[in-house]
Length: 101
Image (cartoon, rainbow, N blue to C red):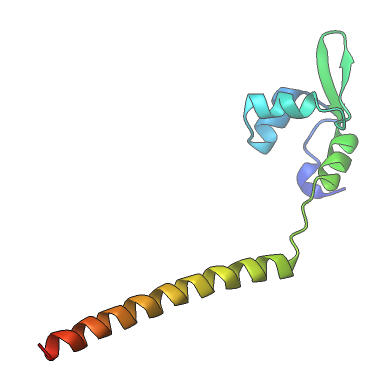
């Protein structure tokens, strides 16, 4: 187990999850009421086991594919460069016309 989670108790309440992870109360309860989240009730208390919480967190990882980001960034860069070229050419033509008047 990761050492940064060792100070969590074996059974964790929504308030402890909220405090430990620094998320809002509404986000915490939305997670606890999600069908894929391994929460359980003991009386009126809503709880989750630390090991199941950490396993659930592992499943939530998002992998960003480099190709997607590169294409998106290159598209933004191309748009930016086209804008610069258009502005530069427009200014050059305006300056050229002003000299010949």
